[in-house]
Image 1 (spheres, rainbow, N blue to C red):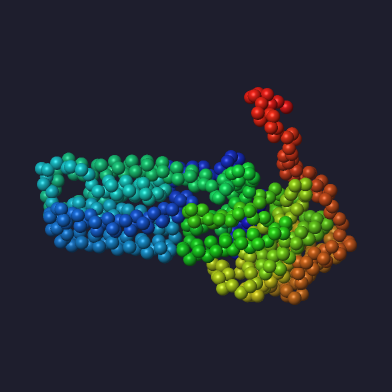
Image 2 (spheres, rainbow, N blue to C red):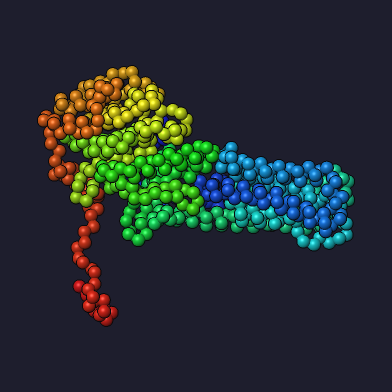
Length: 557
């Protein structure tokens, strides 16, 4: 199964998730405290325009009240009401600026939105209780807080528990504002029954809004999980890394399985606007780099696009195989002939990329997958061009790293990348490929250090132990020499290109053969479920013209 990244400096370990059913995540609980990441962006955008709507509505309603009810003109002279109205404008404008400029995380913005909701409820209550009432007059109608609660419940989604808390606090603002104005201006208190008629409906509406919000929350979540990306229907999550997540999907018309990679919604929800823009650029760059390469040993990209919710995605072939990290972890070091065959296939993909001026920068076992392609076994695919860098001068590309640090996986990091050198070419990928070969032959990393920083320093400073000295298994001398030359600290002392490496591997005479029959035997022994996943057309069920026009039930075979 394909998927991006082990532990890297920029990306965390890929978590592979296997789902027994058609969905990896169930419907969230009605008492959930956190809004799912997929809904965070929608909710934050709604909060922005609701804040704008609130400011405009305040102006309109105050103008109408002053025009039609002269009693409120005197109330407008009260300092408490003036401060409250000014506060409404300032808070509304602040939310618009914060959302537009991306000054805070989207999740934080939504939490501030709860405060905004409660404050606007207080403003409404202050306005309604700013003039004295005749205790003998019956209460006709209800507080504007009830309308505000309905708007927030329907238009501003949030996690059910947070939405319920916000609704209760908003309803409590009416008695709070009432007693504040009562003490500030010395109004005559209302009888308890009149007061209850003003207060109780707000709490009733708050309860209904919690139930409605929980229902809408579940419906929106199901809609997100069932959303179609282009011509593909998402099935279930198969893996996720530090920035991206990969879904198994199916083409609607062709019934073809594929892998869809997209930026993790929770990652986008946790960054500001600038970081989000850089992530989207990097993601788009990865898709364009992969699409520009046509070598069969590079994972194929079928489609790239953006949903109506501004979610970027691209569609890749779904590989039926095993990555080299899992292969060695599960079965131990590989046969030297198999390692030579793997390196030769990787060279084909890398040579095309290097000639196009692209450097992968994250070659490692997790990004190299041995797959079964048709009747071919041990067919290598190179994945994850997320850290690819062009050798062409591109000012925008130089800004792709969010924190300005070296990018790549520490255990497979070329010295020049660890040092942050600006001029990095394809020989950096060859160094990483040498680290991969070392791992495949011995089952051990080139350097055994305790943390990523120490690993990066070791690649720069420490000479590697000869590969043949790290295992009791026999390693052909010629293959060992190639591996150690790939691990030279200085790029000019390494093998010059992937094409030269491939040529050197073909010239080895002391490496035992790993033929297609040996590969097929290994797969049938160790991964029989993959070998059995073949669906031949045993019988042509296409009806003939005569059968199409025959009476129902006449077509039998």
